[in-house]
Image (cartoon, rainbow, N blue to C red):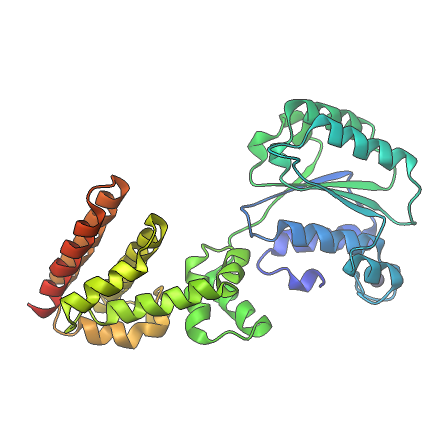
Amino acid sequence: MNFEGIIGQPVLVGSLKRAVKEDLVANAYIFCGPKGSGKKMAAEIFAKALNCRDDSADKPCNACISCRKMESGNHPNIETIRPSGASIKIKQIREVISNVSKKPFESGYKVLIIDEADKMTQEAQDAFLKTLEEPPANTVFILLAQSQYSLLPTVVSRCQVFYLKEVPRQQIESCLAEKFGYNGEQISFAAASANGIIGRAIEMLNNQELIDLRKRQIDLVSRLKGGSYTELSAAASELTVTKGDLEKLLDFMLSWHRDMLFIKQGCDVRLIINSHNADIIRSQAAGLDEKRIYRIIDAITRTISYVNHNVGIKNSIDSMLLNIMEVYNG
Ligand SMILES: [Zn+2]
């Protein structure tokens, strides 16, 4: 993997590439962004580029001995610190700092990645701050955090901070299509539900259980028009063994009917969440006006609120199904 593998982060990639090329490397970086936004991958590619030995190519070359060691996870120049239990403790920071000053390592840069840096205790951050005040030579610290605000301002001010941006849905879709062999329906669903976070889309695509669940959900909503209530009620029961399942089903039904409204209003079908099922949604929408679609959406949101308050869940679902079927078939 090289910098080109980092999707949708031009500022970060541009700056890191320049730092490597011009050998103008800061002592410490903070990469901020939600889980799955690619912070760790960016840190690892940067570490690899900093240690790449091929000066003739774009770094990382992925072929020199250093790059190959990094790929196989055997490079002594890279170390990752993670929370031990709920936090990263001062002992861990002290240990790693003393290793940096003592342990001989290969030429290049020693890169210390602090994963979930927002979980460093106050003492750990104080100890780390001391190191940043007199940083060891050829050592780069990369802090990965969901937000910089849980870090001491004095730590933040000594680091170069990058924010990983949400990636536009179309860009996630084309990345998933080019790099993974998934089919269109899965890709569009994962990309639309990932809120701009590639890792979340990939996680969804790799989860067979989620993919099967999705198929069954589509089957259920497709039968709301003209289907049998008894069968639908039974199918809904099967799909909602836990409260989490139930929330997923309701979210899905909501996205489906919101899409229906968008289609009715003439919105571009490529932009809706369930774009690969646009044909089914369109045929269900035939004969319904916007007012009736709103009634369906209301029935679902009401049920979501009942479920949140644990009010007679089974009954709420059944009466929601009855209400929706009445709108469709009435
Ligand atoms: Zn290399």
